[in-house]
Length: 234
Image 1 (cartoon, rainbow, N blue to C red):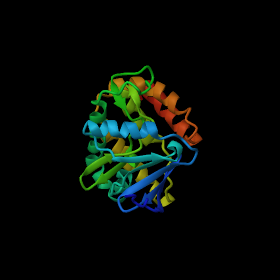
Image 2: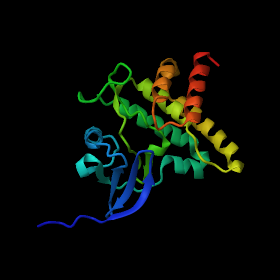
Image 3: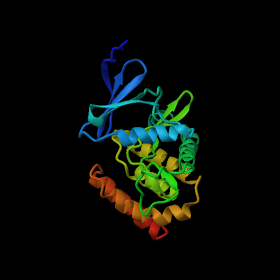
Image 4: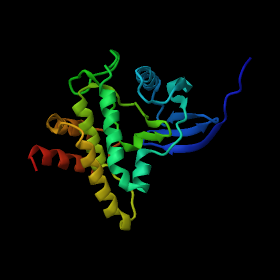
């Protein structure tokens, strides 16, 4: 017996490359605006889930690979929670650090490309509060588009760069407060790691990320400033 396909629902979120729509009561459909193939991302989500890592269940890849149907995870993003309840920054920094450590503890599959010379860790390369949903059962990581095999310290370095440099629209009255909370959150997150290897990789990771066509000029400039300041020990 054939089952009717769910109807495409409203737009739930829009990233820099993809749009996410409701798809029936318990699924979402992620659609690439440029026709980017998503088979690899789906395969990675299935791989980490098989290792007990919190990731959405994959249901289908369609439209020539440019659409990914997966489990709908209910809950706000970590960034939303930090924006509404900034006093939770320590708890959420610990959650984010734990997601890094757990992912880096998974041996990367042989079909993943290496990142900056490769390594023994599975690295996400986009593991920041906007890509973490705080579901009732716990944090869930989404968007494995950039994942590779590399060094865990490189993944932490990239998160440091992204969280420090990413532009966030804010009303002038709230800009200062948002900047203070962001700085406190970043410091709390970094406190969970040995920073010597992270700092050592910061310039190379920054140079790589600054080549990303999705980065804005102000963001790349901020990344270069951070890498330079850490290299000088300031």
